[in-house]
Image (cartoon, rainbow, N blue to C red; front, side):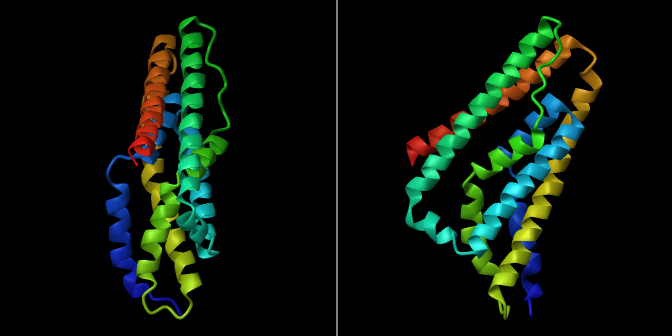
Length: 207
C-alpha cells in the first residue's frame, strides 16, 4: 500500500523548488528562443528522461555512491558546464551565419541536448536524496512509494518548464522570418548558456 496522504505537502515542496528561476528554467527559455516551440517540447522530454534516470538510480540505491563520493558530483558539474559552453559556441555560430544570410546551422538533436543537460545536473539526484525519503510516510512498500514520488516530480517539471519553453518559442515563431531577429534570439540563447556555465563553475569554486 502507498501513503497518499503525503502528496499535498510533497507537491507543495516541489512547487517551491521549481518556481524560482533556475538552470532548467533558463535552459528551456534558451531552447525556446533558439529553436522554437517544437524544439522546446523535445528538449523537455529529454530533461524528463534524465530526471527519470536519476530517480531510478536513487530508488536502486545508487544515491549512496554519490553521497559517499562527493567529488564525483563535482566532476559531473564540470562536465555540464563544459557542455553548456559548447552549446553557446554552436548557437553563436548559428547567429553569425544568420547575419550573413546563410541561414541557421541545424543544431537539432533537441532531445539529446535536453537529456545531456539533465544528466549533468547532479542537483537533481541531490534533490531526490534529500526529499524523497522524507515522504515515504507509512507506505508498506517504500521503493514503490519513491517511484511514484519521483514520477510526480518528473511530470510536474515537464509541465512547468515545458510551458516556459513553449512560451519563449512564441518569440522565435514570430521573428523567425527576419535574419537579424533570428540572430538576436540566438545571441540571447548563447548568453543564457554562458551565464549558466559560469554559475555552475562559480558554485564549484566556492564549494
